[in-house]
Image (cartoon, rainbow, N blue to C red; front, side):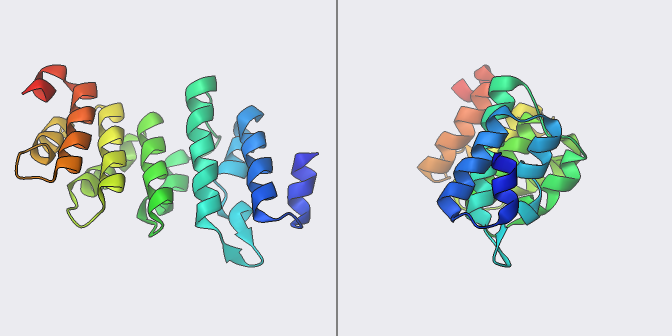
Length: 173
């Protein structure tokens, strides 16, 4: 089975990624937790592979949207360290999951990320999407501030898109 192959640790990174993504496409909540969130699954030869983990999180996002399923366990605790990752694609995907899963206990981190002018637009866009998905009470305020004329065009576009998901009238202004 794919799970047995993954246990051997003899797979190259491409094959390992494909095997994990396949399990995440059809797995149950426990398998989604094990193969999507457990950092040990993304450690090869003693080195953590955040790119591989980011790909798995992206697959979790798709599985959740297509199959209305999520991993077992305390999802906020499992995502919290990923939201602080220096690997930006991993961080952005973790933010999107926090939003899709409506993990309101992570709202402070989501909001702080969206407000941080030192982060790239790709990460801030993910936090904007999470804010809108979580329907955070202060999301409109954060998004409106990011959508001001004084902000860079790509940041404004990201903010307006998420604001439209939250409040079409505010986005139109």
